[in-house]
Image (cartoon, rainbow, N blue to C red):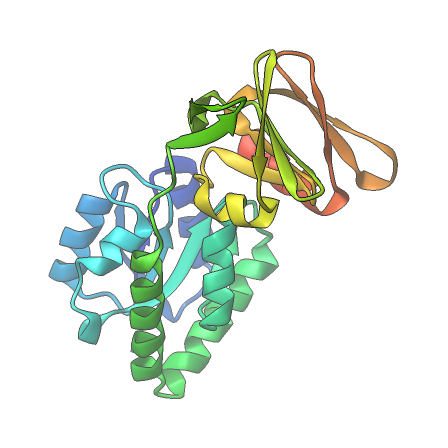
Amino acid sequence: MKIRTLLVDDEALGRKRLRKLLETETDYELIGECCDGQEAVAAIQAFTPDLLFLDVQMPELNGFEVLAQLDHKRLPVIIFVTAYDQYALKAFEAQAIDYLLKPFEDERFYQSLHRVRAYIEGQQSNQISARLETLISGMSLRPKPMTRMAVKTSGRVVFVKTSEIDWIEAVGNYLNLHIGTETHMLRGRISELEKRLDPAQFFRTHRCTIVNLDRVKEFQTLFKGDGVAILKNGTRVPVSRSCSQRLQTLLTPKL
């Protein structure tokens, strides 16, 4: 029997590439494509695919919200497709669920298909469903990203919208929130603040810095793969070698 596959991605070019790669495999059958979360829920319920390529960030419903609306006892095998959700990637890895991180190589795609075959042939679908339920439950417990912060300074409390922050710098046990020409100091660890920020808007470029992606004007590659993000106000924020490629991917506009 062929593995009935459904593609879910809001990017037409993304779906086209997945379709072309899938066409080379004779034991896979493409049964449909969806461009948003609502459409995906309807298609999954109607066609009950064996395999689902599921984008994380989509209009209407994101990938997690799509899964939350499905019968967890009848979930297909899932291959997540994402460009930047670093927290989700950690969750996928912990639950032994495969994912494709954009941009991915053809070989990585075929590795995912090989893993799907192993799951299905080994009759491990129930285990996959159990892991997916655990993943969904864990993601639903994560608090929504903060949109406002309270900073105490000089006997007063300043309320800061996170969307107004240009970048964040860790200095010892304190964090400097850079907003235009102002800097507000907040006691805390950068790793903890990172968890509370919207990963679609903020990206940790270095162990000591986080940038607001909307404020980045330019990226420059430096020696040995390190880089620097140049903000719209001219500030230069360091980018580690391990983060450079991810940052460039995030900054590249979708076609």
